[in-house]
Image (cartoon, rainbow, N blue to C red; front, side):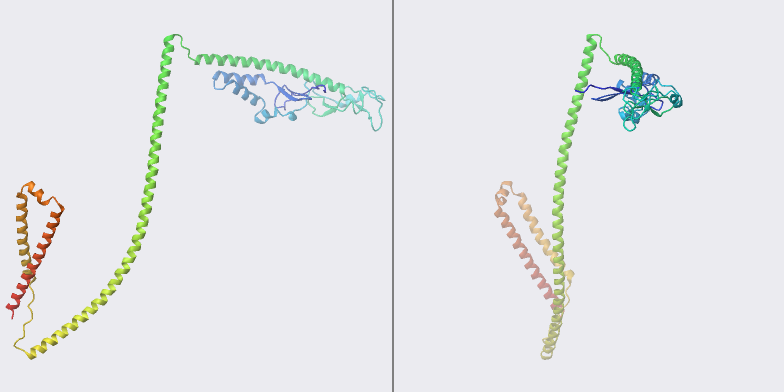
Length: 402
């Protein structure tokens, strides 16, 4: 198993999204540690905790977002590649010319003691301690001032010292910030617990507990009744919906039947119109034929009458006189009155009879048929009488006009 190597990288510059943060790297992975700014954290946590609008988790989350400079910086705290290597214990200015004056001269590396060569082991100098080193012992580069962001070649010893000093200073700053953060969170928790105790009502005696229990039971009962009422209304609504659907389907079926009937009626109407047209044409033809027949008949009759008049002028009968329709209607009305009088007498006689006698005469269907036949016979007799009266009337009119 390989030994775990740990390295620390800090970022405390003004351009960094978060101060007092460092990265811990080893063979198993990497982790990022950071601490909140005290002033900004207090101004964020305490007012929110006092107002009671935000929970502890939301307050911490919002403070973390604000301290890191927004959403991008908040996400970049978990991105290891975005960190900058800056040493907090470096001087403000760094002059390379002063270091070059103090360069040490040697034929071999002052760390690994390997002799320099032209191709494999080139001579280098550390910009921090001015030692004479080789490529292998001076492969790392560091920023040596706060203002100058340029990285210079340093030896492994200086690199180790700078790394350890950064870790120590950053670790102390992180512990201090975390302690302050813990104190702030304790104050928030105390404030929230106090507000929570004030909001929660705890009954003091049994009477209050019983009263609270009754109120709760009554409220629960009302809620149950409301739920039952809603369920009943829902069932009624579903029934009404089913009935409406059924009614709609029935109406649609009736509509289809009416459409089919309308179609057949239109077809029958067309057929009847065609038949009526054919009958009208036929009637025109027959009417013209009948007119011709009547004209021919009248001509033939006139010819026959003229011949008879020439042969027997004394036996010539006068033409029939015009019929008086008013007199004919008066005769018909008198006959109808006589018949109606006879019927009224029969009905009065029938009404005076006893109920038992009525039942015996008209209970059966045969009696009804018999009465119908009697009515038919009476109508025939009336027609015969009317015809006889008409014949007598016409005969008298003819005799009056010889």
